[in-house]
Structures are given as structure tokens and as C-alpha cells.
Image (cartoon, rainbow, N blue to C red; front, side, top):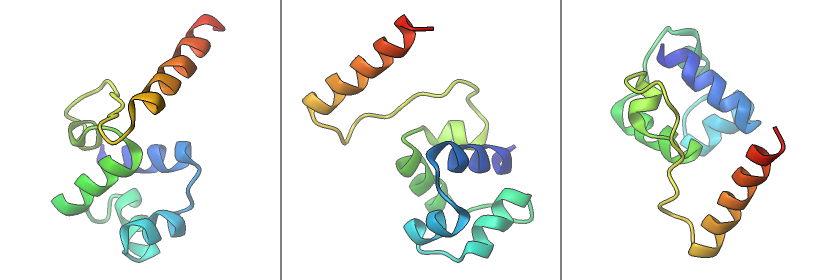
Length: 93
């Protein structure tokens, strides 16, 4: 469910509800309501969440079960560093 995905992504990124709310320019109670399943973020906020967490909107909406990291806004050097980190973690499992 979308509320589980939002909470999991927020916690994995190390954000409090207040910190995420500030990034989105919403109230902390809005983020809390999304995570409790009391309300659903609008399309605008689903897109913003996807950008913040570097995942697809389909992943947030639960239409995709596999997470894909979106690297569109990174430089070539930053992408090389990210792939280097992924390789490091894969090699050290």
C-alpha cells in the first residue's frame, strides 16, 4: 500500500515526518495522514516524493514491486560513484 511505501522510503532516507513535510512544503500532519492511510497524496506530491527518494512514481503507487533508482539529475561522475558503491556492496555481500 502507498502508505507503507512512503513510510519505508522516509525511514530509509533518514527523514523525520517533519523533515519530509518541510521538503514538500506540507504539514507534518499531512505526511502522518499519508503514512497512516488516512489520506492519499495528490499526484503532485507523488511526483515530488519520487524525486526526493529517486524512485519511480509506479513504485510509490505500488504498481511496480521492484525499486529502480532514477539517476537523471546526476552528473556522469556522480553516476559513476553511485555505481561504484553498488558494486562495492554487491561484492561484499
